[in-house]
Amino acid sequence: MADPPGKKKPSELRVEEAASIGPIDVFVTCCPKDLTMFEDARKTAGLEQAFVVEDIAELVACAVELGTLTLHDVPSLVERISATVVERIGAQLEEKLKGIGELRAVPASGSGAALPVAETARAASHATAAPPQTWRIRPLTPAIFPGYVAPAKNGRRFLVAVKHVAKLSDDFRVADGARDIASDYFDYQLNEFDDVALEQALRTAESFRDSEVVVVTVGSAGAEDTLRKALAKGAHRGLRIESGTLGFADPLAVARLLAGIVVAEQPELVFCGVQSSDQANAATGSALARLVGYACAAVAVATEWDGGGVMCVTRELEGGLRHEINVPVPAVITMQAGANIPRYATMRMQKDAKTKPVVDVTPEAADLAPVGGDVGAIALPSVKRATILAGNPDDTAREVLNLVRKHIGGHS
Image 1 (cartoon, helix red, strand yellow):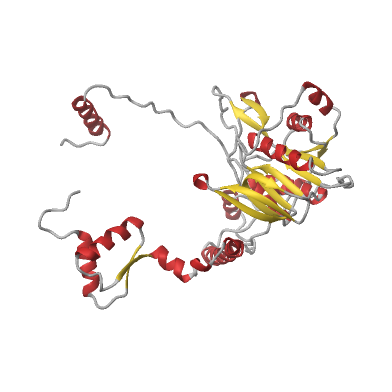
Image 2 (image 1 turned 180 degrees about the vertical axis):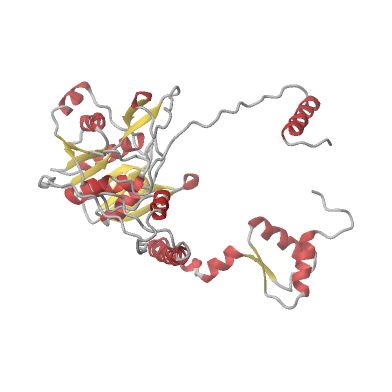
């Protein structure tokens, strides 16, 4: 909108107002565009010597001495920020829960897991006489696999997490009251990102004698097909974690299952895709690293390791930039698609893969519960078709005006 002739710009009025309230040092903005606008207004108003204009982000950067930090300071800085945020959120949550007297933490029957909030509220309404329980944040721990003992290590071991991803067909249907889509509407295949991770693990293993590549997946019996594909490409053995009714949309629950295998296998390196093609969750790899206490490098496009205590990893950043870091081993590396060209499994390799061992392992029942949430119901949204307007600009404008009057109202 053009400024009215003969009148001062609103930005000039604001800086003059700021100067009139008394001596000030800094005129603070909270928007990059405002920063430019008020910088110009300060000059045109003749107030260049009165004060400086700075964005709040600049003040924060100065307060935390951002100019003195290096990339090596980032991990510890993130830890401190995270701890502070968790502490503050916990205090606020505890304060708010004090006012909800009828809400109790009611355990789900047969397990120590807490019910979803809606179920908790319903259960509490029928158990008002029960004493209130303390709300706590319980840290996640790796899943436990009773009876599973990993083979003895004869050299370096690399673990690769692969997923049997489901590609949904265009003609699928959702049954009334269903919480999932029937498997008939899915085409299952090896996840693209995990295929790249497998190739990186195989290339790393080929640099050493007596190395072993173990592939692990979470899923039903059909997921063994994906393990066989990985074995055909050169992996030595496979593990299938029985998922029960666990939904794959929960990356933390899946990370717990994978973490239990990492604890049992004790690999030097864990490779996995940065995300799965059917569920764009990129949290599984980093959550896995945190659960087992490994270092983590995400969105990797190249790795170099001589078998020592440090691995050189090149990561992909925004805008095509790349970041090279040294990661202590053991570590979890999540690979970006396109980082390498996965090898092709010949018919002979596929035949040999059928003789390689695949072990099915089942965690304790409590480890098959969703961590972050569960699916209550799914449904298709109502479909609204788009209207394509044709004609000259006047006809199009007239049609748009008619649509506005029809749906919103008005006569002008």
